[in-house]
Image 1 (cartoon, rainbow, N blue to C red):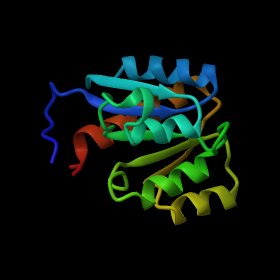
Image 2 (cartoon, helix red, strand yellow; image 1 turned 90 degrees about the vertical axis):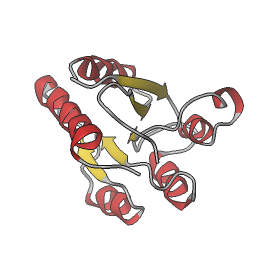
Image 3 (cartoon, one colour; image 1 turned 30 degrees about the vertical axis):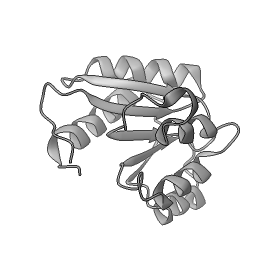
Image 4 (tube, rainbow, N blue to C red; image 1 turned 45 degrees about the horizontal axis):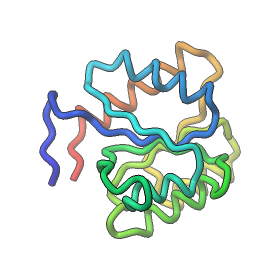
Length: 146
């Protein structure tokens, strides 16, 4: 089990292809009281390489939390989520689906594939930042992770 304290960076993997959303999340995380080490990949195949420590990602840490968009190039977020939760070495990492979709089918599919949380991206900037910070606070401070 990974030892965590306030000084230990909380490692977040953001799987997102929209540059505007990436910038917004980076800015939101700067407001966190926790030290956050953010890694960003822009498609589903790179996400799986990162998580499996393949190719250019051999030295990267295992994330404490994953923010996963559903609409990704190369391999969509639904497929990535399913592969994460089927992998014995990855399935314990909390996956927060963070997407524009509010479609009931997407929500049901995400939870059927063991997403830990499903958040529809708010259009309001302040609300978006608040949601990101609340998620980080919850997963980094309030609960215990394996």
